[in-house]
Image 1 (cartoon, rainbow, N blue to C red):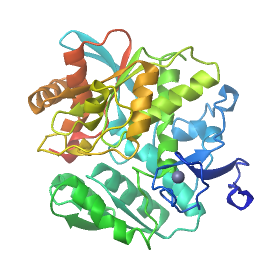
Image 2 (tube, helix red, strand yellow; image 1 turned 30 degrees about the vertical axis):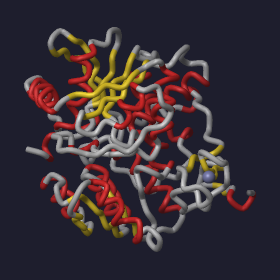
Image 3 (tube, rainbow, N blue to C red; image 1 turned 120 degrees about the vertical axis):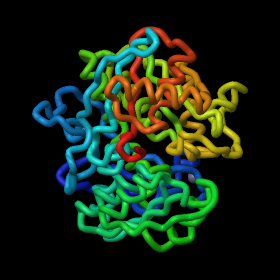
Image 4 (tube, rainbow, N blue to C red; image 1 turned 90 degrees about the horizontal axis):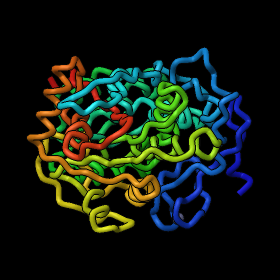
Amino acid sequence: MSKLKREIGQNSYMTHLICSSCGQPAAPLDWQCRNDGQPLEIADLPAFDTTKINSDDWSVWRYEAMLPVTRQVSLGEGGTPLVETSIQGMQFHAKLEYLNPTGSYKDRGTVTLLNYLLAQGVTEVIEDSSGNAGASLAAYAAAAGITARIYTPESAPVGKKRLITSFGARLVEIPGPRAATTQAILDVAKSIPYATHAWNPYFGLGQMTIAWEVWEQLGRRAPDAVVCPVGQGGLFLGFARGFKALRDAGLIERLPKLYAAQSAACDPIVRAWEQGRKASKPVTQSLTVADGIVITQPVRNQAVLAAIYESEGGALRVADGDILAAKTALNQRGLIVEPTSAVPVAALLRAKIEGTVVIPLTGSGLKTL
Ligand SMILES: [Zn+2]
């Protein structure tokens, strides 16, 4: 165990990877447990401490003391606006995640993951993505001067694919459903570091900063509810873990109700929640406009469901027609979102969730025009 504990850069935190299921320690570049194939977690994360907020910084590095990685590369990720808007009489706070450096919330997690991998001496990375995570990794790899190879479904939006290659990454297009892209990368991942947003907990690390920003932007209080699109559930778990850290620090009394929003065409979490199950079962994907969240079996589905139950939230499915109507309504309010980002707004309009509601607008519509 002791050889896995390392001093990381200027932060003196001792962190290491362990299995989320059996607790077995993992090597620094492992992306899943070698014992049972389950996802890994970072052990001994620093507690949230308000006295350690770097109030001069308006990026995710405002919370650097709570992020056990050394900042070698940054593109100014995080620090996104929270703006009030209303559609059909339903008011909510929109967190404009599409204003991140590569136009999606993924940059929060990519920056912590890539800085972690750089500290491990990595010079080449691979990733599979429906587009946004790939574009994000391609940009940060370019900024870090390392090479990236991104596997995407052939059907991914052209704008996302062009963005990936514009950063100098190699694009590998895989025919068939989204799951075929993941399958294609697994062989390559045996020999090249797999910078996976779905599996690597150092991606999840940066995602927690969205909860901390929302808490500060609301005047150091939690919203009543968060409605979030869920594919792998990376951002959803970022909210869950970030708000839990605030609760553990005694800064909020209870978690906001966390609602997972999915397309009716690919809804494994909604089905599991409706049946009161602790784990989801793989579903069959059909076509949907919400191309960013077609994950038939999320890697961390048990953690997503646990967060829904613990927060007394829920899971909501919406049809493509409602997603497109919500996207149009957002556009008509000057909010530039891709269809996937309209999923939680469509869910809010259907479920009529009350109180202070926060919805992250996850991805830029400029990529899908
Ligand atoms: Zn394990």
